[in-house]
Amino acid sequence: MIIPYEQLSSDALQGLIEEFITREGTDYGLEEISLSTKVEQVKNQLKRREVVVVFDETTESVSILSRRDAELLEQDSAT
Image (cartoon, one colour):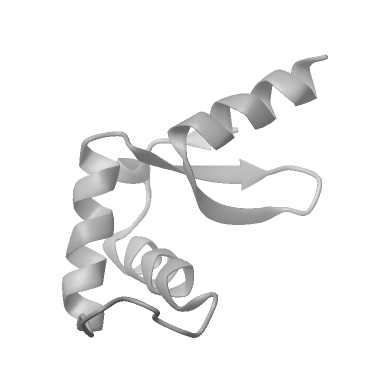
């Protein structure tokens, strides 16, 4: 289920974004980007609806997914 990011508190959204960014633990980019810059990039992606906040009722967990992946998950759960 897609949840509008605006419904999250600023602290909850910050924590979710930081967890999303640091999930893999390694940055393989050509240049190192600060955590604060990455957080702003994800916030901008949320504003543009490129990524969305998703609540998984089965695991009772929240994550950030690309809009496309979230829509595919919703289609799969509807069938």
